[in-house]
Amino acid sequence: KTFAIFDETLQQIFRVSDKCLKFQVTSLEWSKNGEYLAVGSFEIVSVFDKFGLLIRSESLVRKGSVFAIDWANDSKQFAFGCGNGQIFIADSVGKKIAKGKFEAYLESRNKIVL
Image 1 (tube, rainbow, N blue to C red):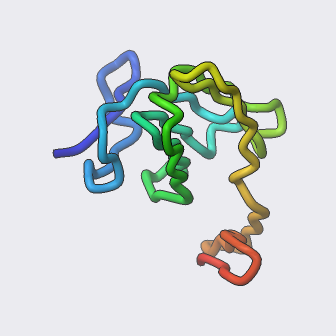
Image 2: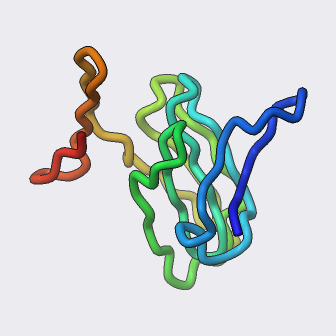
Image 3: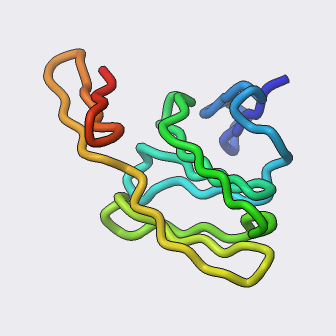
């Protein structure tokens, strides 16, 4: 199974395996710069790059489903609301640099993904 998003001409613009998504999607939002997609489901919020690569996924124990996501204008943070009424601000998109065909992403304090 896969999760896919299509544009208005029915061209597939995003695809990710259901192995990355444990539950049904309850909300999603593209970042303002179009580089990232935040996806909410039952007690999980995930961020993918525009190619469908999972960047980060966070478990939200006893928070309910994620029902609303909104990115900041700089595309580095987003806010989301959960079924239990709580609102969170996530700073999950790290620094990224590109040189030629290569792109390096600082995933955590001690992990760089190329």
